[in-house]
Image (cartoon, rainbow over all chains, first blue to last red; front, side, top):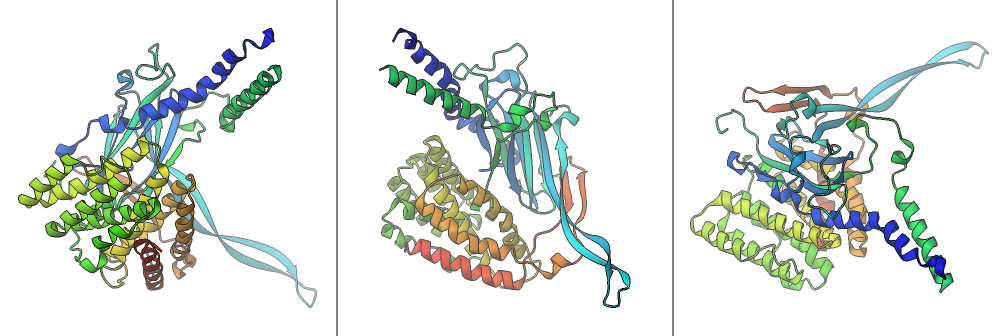
Length: 196
Length: 297
């Protein structure tokens, strides 16, 4: 019986990461509402925004849909971990699928026993990822404004850096998670720059 | 007792190991990699709201037709949580359409109906006293833009409240109801006209439907499963193989250019289009599904 006395302690240790993650998610549910908005510029909060508990060194992908002729602003914030401000790396990428015709030839024997070459064409679809924006090439800017000439799906990849000596757990339940908000805002597309 | 502890330990160990192996890519990938190359399962699929759809169409001289809207008198007929949630979504889409066109008179009755349904669904903060006061002020001053903004806030409040309280089943039903009503409205704005603004926005809904189906697939709810099953017919119509698919690709080169005022423009790729047959089939299917929802059959 004695040797099982440690089991409750082990149980707590084993369950801690699971409970911690769930707790973190709950704590982070509304982080994005604390991110600074650009209502002054005419932007409206977009429901494709996301709040979550991000682990340091972790990358999350948020797939959003942007409409043609709308202007979007994407920004990232972590009010619970101000030391991360300016440190988030994010990319906007798009999967491009192209249909191409692929020709193949083969040698066949006809009814008279003669060999001949037959060419067939087959339509195949290839998908490649195109990075549209990378904030590491833009002085680690933490926000980005863009428009699209047509409606498309975009992937926003957000990377939370490793903390440099600081405690990532500030504002959280003693963990290595940080509450991060990915704020998406929109407004009708601007043809000229006069209202900015 | 010993046996109990032993079982507890085994269960916890299994749980621990299961949680550790939930991302196999991470388990095997010990090489140093650049941030963007880190394998991840953290992918979230987002769905634009009806408010965003009607914001897009706001400056497109969209017709206003009351017949496209769900009758607010039906609200008292919805008795189950599922029918209330679906129709909450329907009415929020109607509200977005009405307020995007600045129709003050109709807007207030939709706000009232949504407020009533939000109480039934225990989404107390969706249309709270603050919003009602701001609504009144904006109605008196005929401030159409603020009214549209308020309709967005209403949806945002409901969405946030349901997420916070882990009521994703209700949230998903609202999103589905809103998506169907939004599509039904734009399908009935004007007759088919190839490459018209409206037809392009209808074609765009193929993309939003794809994300909607992934989003709802993570949620277990019987009524949600039924309605999502019905969406498969709509997906099939969007996926009809057209003659264009057999031609050489008409997609243009991918470009990203900065305008004079510093805004990046993403260009290129394939445009979304639909044929007249797709338009007609969609109109019929969506109307049937929408009728099921608003008649709470």
